[in-house]
Image (cartoon, rainbow, N blue to C red; front, side, top):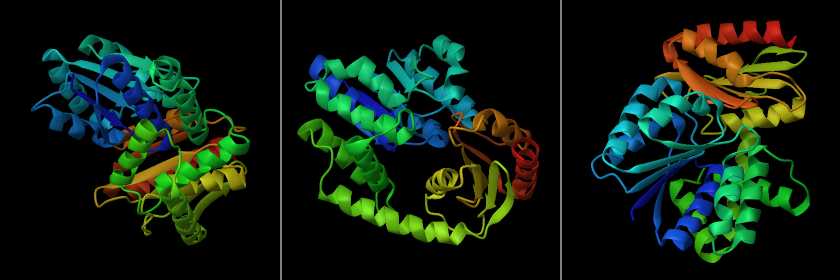
Length: 324
């Protein structure tokens, strides 16, 4: 049986993917091929599979992207109509909001609103692996890194170290795939390369944090909005927003330009503040012809680059209205 897993490249997505891979190997004798992708280009990954679809496709920890949903749903329909099976494991709200459409297409959806992809993988697949205790620990680290549970002691340190290593500037997909192979084949959580990349990440993050300090557009009692469109953040935007939200104790939105076509706002919400990032930011992005997704406490929205100033203005109005 040919199996392809399309997974998000953070610790939650990779831990869940590794657990599913191990379960398929032991229970079905199947060796899955893992590919890493993002919500906004899931449809491109699916299009590459259309020439020769696998017997089973699993989509892991990839939230449904509204802006590309039509292309994504069309590709999924083509795959299912060829007699292939598709499993989607997720915890992002936009995915479940299309649950009926996914069912009509023939996609099996595993969803949770009280955990993350690692939670689903542990509950559904860890017992099918050759080492349930190891995968129980691995998925717990994924939960901690994704904020689904609070980490303490050794678990918190391991989760921080792995998440940092995966986010280092030099950590391309090749490193992430090697790390998953180590988990599945050797049952080791970290090695020397993880430690080196974690140190690289912390140094790079400190440098980027220093660059955005004077980019504050709005700061109110419970909110912080920054405009970093003129900076090259090199994949650190979400980490910067998370660090600032934690340190300042405020809802933090960081606006940046990842490419020549789009402006993105990534938002992080402290647990003690009642603010739904997806519900509040998605309508603004949609009004400007954009989209995005995420969770109540962590979301990212994108709009056409030429509408960046208007996007920033609407976010500023939202923060003053809802968070002051």
